[in-house]
Image 1 (tube, rainbow, N blue to C red):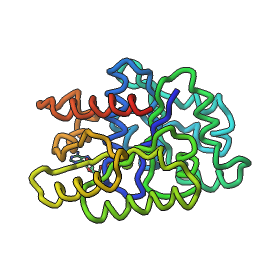
Image 2: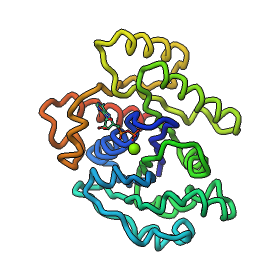
Image 3: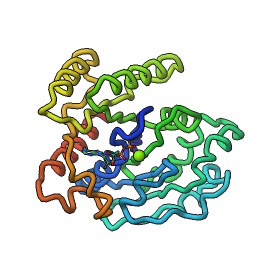
Image 4: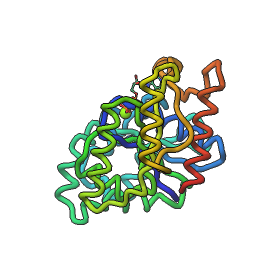
Length: 247
Ligand SMILES: Nc1ncnc2c1ncn2[C@@H]1O[C@H](COP(=O)(O)OP(=O)(O)O)[C@@H](O)[C@H]1O
Ligand SMILES: [Mg+2]
């Protein structure tokens, strides 16, 4: 079992869109996938039409395997299950900080269901906290969507610095250009510069800006299931292939 965390210290960069469509693409490729929605806003659960579970509302959640597995829901797609978020994830940091081994608690909980899945995808909230340290320790790959603009470049450098300062393995970080607009000179130049600076850290596939992604909210389904053009479905499938090859 491998764990892929869709993470960024910045909001609105495409973490949820990536988590949802990557999870769907991996399952379509035959992988058994669990998508865990760790963002209290619950967007990835919403996209899969899965309601939050009331059972998650207390601190025993990560200690009690039965509680954790009882909260997992089937999706409408073969081989793809969802652990929906709950507003109590807001309190995650509070109770994680009260636990022993608090920085590896998430890793232990995920290992307990690991036998049932080939890949676990985590949709993360955009902050650096005890929860994110848990995420960095649990994950085999930290997949970071980066919009090719100057501000995103700064946030990405801050994330690399955080990993360095906390002795976390930077080789876990896989970066991915998201919402790229080919016609914009700034986007093209930023992608070139960042690729040159970061070497192999960036994946080859680039996720294009597309209004089809916005429509996921209306369809409440992964983009590959309804988009007229195959371009996005193919991009997420290439992403799935590249991520699997890197793990
Ligand atoms: N490739 C894309 N093209 C166009 N819009 C996108 C794309 N990816 C995400 N979006 C839109 O941008 C907003 C933020 O995306 P989301 O995945 O929710 O980001 P995050 O989880 O990082 O906050 C959403 O409204 C989403 O529909
Ligand atoms: Mg999100």
